[in-house]
Length: 304
Image (tube, rainbow, N blue to C red; front, side, top):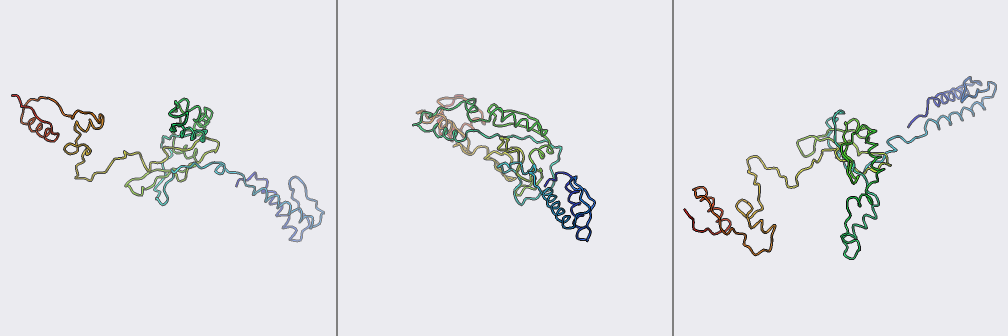
């Protein structure tokens, strides 16, 4: 709760003194309340009534709840805060810089949903009538005013714009942890990862903003799940990792027939070399024998 000023306290204290004076049997008080002097000759009942009114006024003044900055902010529908139960091991240094991507909301969402259905409906006149980037931005992207307001918000909180997008859907910014915490109402903590032998940083709560800003998400506030190749696998020490295991050749190597099947399926060619030559050595002879055996390619009579 936010107090309006120090004056209600003096009013409140004056009222309490008046009450105490009455209950103590006194009939006079010398305080001034709200600029009106209390009459020294009024009876105790009048003083008591006036004191009660002052108390009521002071309590009302003291406990009027004003919206705090936190109450005026809207929490973003993100999942960036640390998972429940993880152990915090410290704070991210306030001087450390982070790069963030602010994503803006699309406009005319219902119209966009309808268009997406029509684009793939053969009976619709909009079937496969795809929009250009410029057309999509004009109809559904954030407005120029929306984008500028987000840029202004970033700049007013000490964040530097590092990249803008032609469709105005993303605004890349960078800034210190201290500025980011103030901008998004978070505390950047360092946590022990629950399943990996490392730490990660994340906000203690979901970020929040002024609801008038058309921001729907923030990328870069956490490294709990960094980007990884989908097929990346950890190979235990001592094991040999195979680069290719999907070809039809030895050890999963790709052969000509594999390339043909991938890029020219249905052709009548057998995928075999009609004629080729090489300089005959013991090494090339062995390699050639292995290759022709694996690929079923017949060899012509060698020439010396």
